[in-house]
Length: 176
Image (cartoon, rainbow, N blue to C red; front, side, top):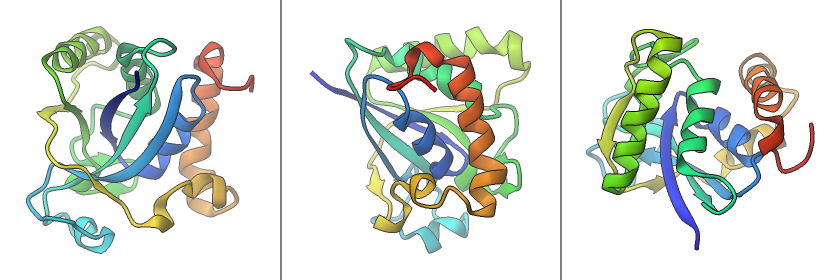
């Protein structure tokens, strides 16, 4: 039976592209969570005023990839030490956050923070209960796959994908 994980690590295009490559991941959906506005738009979220984070909802098969492994990927492909920022993307919508749906996910998130703190030093990743997840507009889905040559994709997303493919080669859907 499939399970879901909701993670925010800067721009959702980056996370979506990375998790799409992993064996056991059935679907990755970009969207917004953690805010106060119902059915927010990208334009609203980009202001930073809604409280939402750009996030992905990952549907996965826990018999193939564990929640803990999804979190290991998360802490490898983004910088969990910068508050409300990933590179040039600045604002609370780009915060590092794990939105847990169960006590088991919360415990796994706490364990992952403990595992990666010696590697990163101070981690500012927010751990928060999952509220409503609002899917992003259709133009945000599969953004990297549809726009691999764009400047943002080449400068920001491609290096994260390269790191994922090198570090988690044994977890990929297809060998890189």
